[in-house]
Length: 210
View (cartoon, rainbow, N blue to C red):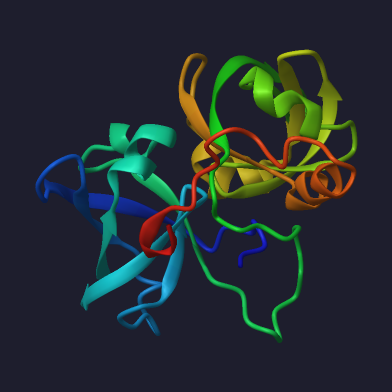
């Protein structure tokens, strides 16, 4: 479990195909590796990955084919910046919201509107996810916990403060770039309890947790 508060910007060191459609990804993260051990969970752009090895300030993790298909991790190349967050502990402050690291789908930036102290960014999202997104509700974009400012049939908008623009990948991404989306898990549970479909089709449970 995570909170959507990015701890540091890491960097992809290398990606290695491991047979079939799976891969091994190595990521540099000086902060998150300070106490990382084999089996720990680290969110990479919002995708929960399981640490298989730590070498200095670089950790490696297996990425399954399902995760590569249903998230934007498959597009990462060496040198790419990534948002990193270690799993929350029972004593952690819940600065964002409850984030599972289970990506529901891939969205796309459709516009950016700079203002004096913030920037409004609009994202397109898969139609199957739109019913879980509400104004003033929470959503995770590339692992960043954000509050929805506006919502339409197939889009939503958020306001990004200078800290978010500076300390996460969202500050440098442009129109057309893909982003990992995770909707609020509480909305999916409510739908299930009320007799709905029980969640967006094919929601991802990445890393070793599938």
